[in-house]
Structure formats: C-alpha cells, structure tokens
Length: 423
Image (cartoon, rainbow, N blue to C red):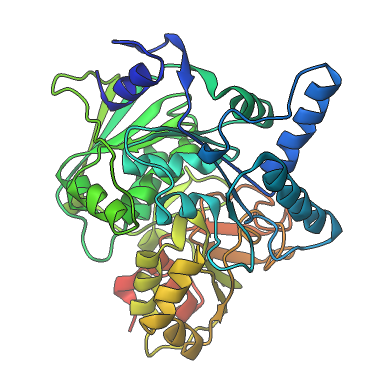
C-alpha cells in the first residue's frame, strides 16, 4: 500500500484498503474558521430541529478554530460571525481558538503546521478547500463541506472513497530562481484543473527530498487547484525536525511500501525548470515568465496560505532589498509567528524601505473579500492560488499567479518579470 492507503486503513480499522473502496474513517483533527464555522452552526440548528442531539462534540480537544477570512472584520456580518465563533468555542469547550488580535493567530492552513496541530499519519479534515496543504507533513488532509464537518464534530468519523494516487517525481534540486510554486504551476498546467479529480497527488523523488517542509506545503496547497482529494509528501527527518521545533512529539512516520502502486507517474527534471506564471483566468493557463505577455501591473500581492510562509517572505526580501517598488505592493505574513520572525530578522524593514505595505495575517484579499480587493480592469501579480474571474475583486480584474520571487521582481519593474532579469 502507498502512504494514503496505509493512513486510511489504520483510520478505518482495516488491514488493507484499495482505491475506490468506500470506508468509514476515524478523524484525528478537525478545523473550522470564521466562514465555515457559522455554516456548520446553521447545520447544527437544522439537526436540532430534527431532534438530533447537538449539545456535545465527540472530542473538543481534537477541534481547533481560526479567525482568518474576514479579519479584521470587514462589516457587520463578519464581525457577528467572529462573535458566533467565540460563543461556539465557549459552549463546546474548544480550547484551541486562534483569535484575531489576541497573540498568535493567522491563516488556518498556516496555523496547522506553524502550531504543529496536525501530525504525520493523522486524518485531518477542515472546513476549507485548501486543507490539502497540511498533507506536506505526511498526513491525510482534505477539505469538507459544512454538513460533513458537522457530522465529524458530532461523531468523530466520516466516509471516504479511497482515492487513486498520482505520483509526481522531481529529479534534482530546484535552481535558486525557481520555487515550489513554479513546480506546482507547471504540474497543473500539464494535467489541468481537473487532472486529479478525487485523486491523491503524492510528491517524491530527490528534488522533494531536497525541499524544505515549507516548499512542500506550497505543493500540497495547490493540489486543490488540480481537483485533488488531497496532496501528500512522505515524512522524513526534515518533517520531524520541523515539528519538534514547534513542540510536537510522540508521532509516528507512516510511509508507503517499496512496491506501492500508483495509477500514474509523472517525472520532472529540476534542471529544466524555469519561473512560471498562470495567466487569467485559470491556474492551468501557464506560461514561462520570460514568455509572458507585456502588461502594466497595478498591484503585487505577497500573501495567503500559498505564498506568505517565512521562506516566501525571505525570497521576496532578497529581491526587494535595496530596491523600490513601482506598483502598489502588499505583503501579509501568513501568521503572527511568521510576522514576528520577519520583524526580528529585518525583513519587515526591507519591505517598508522598498515602499511596500505590510499588513496583518488575513485571507481577505486572496478571496476578494476585503483588505485590498481589485477594481475593474486592475491587473495583479499574486502569490495566491486562484485566478478565476472575480477571485481577488471585480469580475473584470485580472490576476497572474506566481512565486514570491516573481511577484517581488514584478513589483520592482511594474511588469511580469523573471527574477533573473532584474538589473
């Protein structure tokens, strides 16, 4: 069995599982945020009216809550949703509630690894489609809708169809000007946004071994954009070190068998990789940056669960140090812990000296909700994960997806720019 099959077999009390089997799995961790949480509470209200007991959760210690999408509150409804979350965690005895403006908080998919909330071998579900991110730690991580999350919260179990696994092998270490974001954009450009529908995307090979945990997180994050059920990387010593630095212990590394089977294997050579962007209006609409259209940009956005981890900020700082931005540039660290580290190591000063605006952790601009939405006809280069019409604001705005290196280089020139081509 491969790693996903082993994890799901353990979770369903089975010795063996195979692709397309339907299983009932025990859940190890579950997350909701300020959008999915209120949605789940509406489901609870419906269930209560049907006579279902919703007074207790199956295990509050395995539940955690993030305030991230509409923080700081954009208007009355989002402010009220934060209050609903606070009442929810108080009522059900949920202690892990990361509150905006109260010490450590941030984007939910960043907190999952920054706070070591999810461990290798676990089954983790969240009320958000990019829950896939945390598969980089060697867990089975996927997003569920409000009704399924409500069921998990009450019962601690949910059904899955065991997914087929696509294996993506990277040979060799990526060049310095190429990031994990470039690799995942290349993959999505090759297989399409439906190329992994309800499948696992597993990443391996010497190039993945060379990657940091944060780079692997970028890969797994955007498996969602290929339609995947989940993304995963087998855990190794880097995984162990990363989690131990964040206070985690007592976890087991699950790995696939040497003769594990995959439905298809894709192979990539690091030496052939170049910086890539996705043009509007799909992540699969990829092109090498040096072959990108010549457009005048209005904004560069370096943020989100995809592109505002600490190493992403480091990459942007290398480009921006000693330079000035020519367009509106917004940089939002993905969690307060990352923000503080960036401040302590001088990255925030580099950003401010370059003329960029540094903001709080929030999903607001990425999902086109607030804190920097795009106007009609505005064009943005962004480290986020989606660029369909209206994703970051007006339906007639445009977003080009890129790595933090490309986003920073483009901020300096005001045009889509390969970092190698800066003067």
